[in-house]
Image 1 (cartoon, one colour):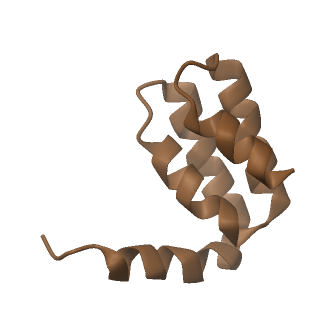
Image 2 (cartoon, helix red, strand yellow):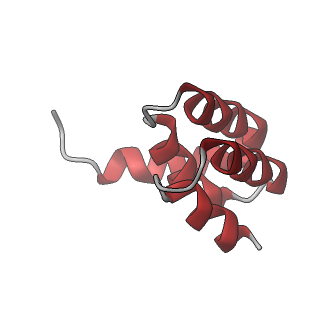
Length: 78
C-alpha cells in the first residue's frame, strides 16, 4: 500500500488533506522507500503538506538515513 500513498503525496491536484494523510501513512510505515516522496513533499507550497512530510521523515528515524545518504551522494556538487 506504500505505493498508493507515494502517488497520492506526489499529485499536486489532490486536496491537501489527503496529501497530509499520505505523508502520515508513509511515516507510520517505517519504510525507507518513502524517503524520496517525503523529501519531494517537503518542498510543497502547502504548509500542512510540507510540515506533515517533515514530521513523517522524523518518524522514520534511522530507517531514513541510508536513502537520505544515497540521495545526497547522487546530487552534483553545488
